[in-house]
Structures are given as C-alpha cells and as structure tokens.
Length: 467
Image (cartoon, rainbow, N blue to C red):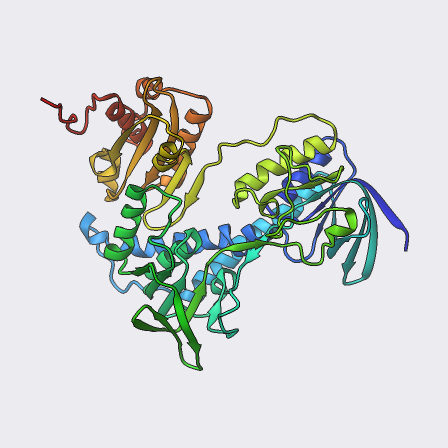
C-alpha cells in the first residue's frame, strides 16, 4: 500500500484535536485526523458531556424534591436510571455525529485507527482494514489522558474509574469515592442527588484544594449537610477488599463497605502505542510531551496540545491550544497560548474560578482587596430558591485592577465567563461596578460584589468602620 501525504495530520479527535483539524483545513491545509476509539474524545464520550447530562437530570430530581417550598406538589417522583442513561447516550451520540459532520464539511479526511510514529514525518495507522501509511509535513498530537488506577487496588468489576462508572447499568446504593478532586466530588454529588449513600475518601487535608478555603468550605458544607455525603480527609484508603456482594475499605480506624469503589485520584497522558521516540520526541518523567507557548515540541513540525502536554487538563484549554497550534502549523504566526484559563466544577453547588486565588496572590506577595456578595442577598436567586454561596472579586489593592474571581452557587459555571472577560481586559473594580447589569438576574451579582469591594455596597450592610 502506498503513502498518503498531508500538510497536517492530527492524532486524536477530542476537544483539542478536532478543532485543530478544522482550523488547519480552513486555512487551506490538506488535513487528516486519526482517531482510534470515539470521535469527540474522552470529554464528549466519557467525561464532560455525559457527566453533565446526568447531573442535569439529577439536579432536576433534587429540585423537584424541594418544590413544596415554592408551592408545588410533586408526588410519586422516581428516578428511572435506565432512562437517565438513555438520555446521556442520546446526547453523546448526537454530539459525536456533529463532530464528524463538522470535520467532513471542512474537508478534513477522517481516519479510524491507532497512529504511531515511524519517523518524524511518517506515520503508521493500524485499523480494521490493515495498516495505512501517512506522510505529514506537520503533526499535532492530541491524544489526551486517561484515569490513573493505583497498583495497590484490586482489579475487580466493583472497582471502577470515572469512565466505567458512567456506564454502570444500575445506580450503586452505597458508593465509596477515592479522591476528593473535582472529578471525585462531581460524581459524588451526582450519585448523592440520585439517592446513593456516598463516602468520599481524600488523602490530603481537604477536598478541592485548588480552591480558596472559603469556596471549598461552602462546597463541603453542602456536600455534607445538604446531600448527606460523608467526607473523610487526612487518611489513605487501606486494605481494599472486594467480593461478590461488596467492596470494603479501611480509612484510619474505621472500615466502610460499599457496592462500588470509584477511583478518581488523577489522570495520566495517553502516549502508549504512539512511539514518539521514533520521531525524536521524548516524554518527560511523567509521560508528558512538553511544548512551548505555541504548543511546539522540541522536534520541529510536531505539536502537542491538551492533556498530553502537561498543561491544564481542561477541554476548553485544549480547544484554544488546538486553534493556536493549527495556525502556527500553517505559518499564520498566531499569538501564544492564553494564560487565563477559567475552571468550572459541577458539584452541588457549582463552583468556578479564574485568575489568581487569594492563596496564590499571597504566595506572590501581592497586596489585594476582596469583595464578596452572597446569593442570599440577590433577588433573582431568592426568587428561584437558590441562595447558597457567593461570588468574590480579587483586585490589586492600589490600582483596583481585577486579578481573580470565584463563584460558588447557582449557575456559577456560566457566571464565570463575565469575570474571565473582565480580568483578561484588565478592567478595574470601579469599571465593573459602574457597568449597568440587568435586574433581576444572576449576573448582576458581579456588580454587587464590585460595590462591596469598593466599600459602598447597596444591597448588603456596609462594612464596619474602625473607631
């Protein structure tokens, strides 16, 4: 079989890879994309999208359970777990088909199989119909990451990673979650909202340690007191035993039993089978293919984007990097990667952050001012019966320039976009406070928080003045 030549070949059709292929093709490059498993990658098939489809359904069930406070009566409410999975699968299938349609409409050749380097510019793709050989002037590696499964854990159907958890045919009545990061906490909240008894085990001193203490305290309070989740921090999970009917875990002096152990302790880059060494590309000690601010690796003509390059393991970061890598690959001289990357966590309540946290500002010896405004004082939140949480601005003390923001509460994951734009535009707290926000909306909470930071709030009591 001969060799097919392309200007750009993208390996991996996840949230970084398929936008990179589309953009390269839009710039006139003869482009191919190789995917070995599922179009749309982990995010679309086993991560972001299916998780949020199930969380949306669980949130509706939880809201219905509290409807009596708003004068509504719901009787006989139940969760059809098979129906919930069908909703999740329909959503995934529709979006995956959309990815393939977008690639086709932009003239990108789609190749199914596992790609591996033969030389810097030559690839072998092993598929159902044999091996196909590709020549590529530029290669963009977008192979993503996969769940880490510690070696001390038994290999058993009751011990699952996040991907397998989302495909369980039945909801576990008793769930033990190993790991208090964002994946573990999201899935713990999902299971608890659907009625499972949940225990979260975190080796470190608290869950969600990337967040400031006040933000994670709000999430933990809700998880423990609103959802009934047992949160155990500061001790490892030990003596994990599996059987036909249960899995047992010892944490400190206590022992716990569950129907399922969900392992969410981190992710590792996917480079198995890629053979990057044949192209002169050596992964670092953790397996990442490191790249510069334009996503160029040390080997000319080879780029690495998304989770595989060791940067933020976020779909939207991968998409942004993919667009920049594609532009650079075709000689468009793009700006470097964006450094301001918002993060969102779909716990109950939702959490979002962007820019510096208070802790990070302190480590940088930056003098900052902080302004918080609670959802309990916001008319739209009160009207909707969603009053937990707050937002906060973090600004330079002298200039008032906004350098960070966080939100924990209703619609936090949507609200953070305004904060990201304000910080990226280097706005000051005064400029946000003067901007008219429509009332009654959730979005006006940023204006209210700006007023608090400036020291003259309207809808909460003013700060106490020192004598």
